[in-house]
Length: 262
Picture 1 (tube, rainbow, N blue to C red):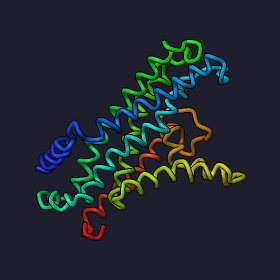
Picture 2 (picture 1 turned 30 degrees about the vertical axis):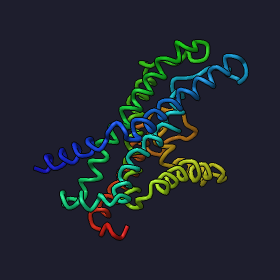
Picture 3 (picture 1 turned 45 degrees about the vertical axis):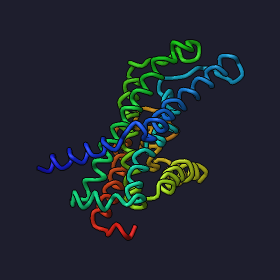
Picture 4 (picture 1 turned 180 degrees about the horizontal axis):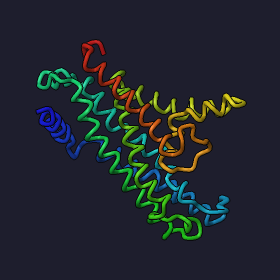
């Protein structure tokens, strides 16, 4: 019976995704175009000796722009959808039809998480496959089906799915899309960058506890930290626990709080 309710909620979310949804004309295209454009521009400049491309690209560094840009762009799709329920006052109707409030963020995560993960998987594969053919001098060492390549093909979509959960959890706590995106980006590009300037062993430990750095390490991407959690798998699990915990906290608050108080 519970599975039926979740399935209905998922179908409802899919029905809302018409061809006019910004997910299709903005979020997904930008998540694809930006890493392609950056990699293409850098590879072209390196091949023309405008930039120093000595050593070329390695497989374990090939997903960098996907992790930096695409994951957060794709997160915005789910965040915007959940926040819009409050902005348009449709959330009361949703909860009137389905009194199990926690099903709403779960359905959002299933739909937008799968869109995000699928997009990330396609982008990762295309970049790892296409660029070695387009720029063999720069990308010649990159192999899509090598051990490192397979790690990225599996890890990057999972990382993106977890970021979608993180964003939805924060959106359930603070249903303001701009604020949610700002919080996540400040965490990733503000706090985690700031701790790199903290001197000594304490600074190193703070870096090793940084969730996003551990997530990147966990998917097989080249990073500047060593894992405190037993290696790549442990670091990815640590990142997953952080994201899932915040999603759970947001979901519980949404289920227990009067929506007029948001």
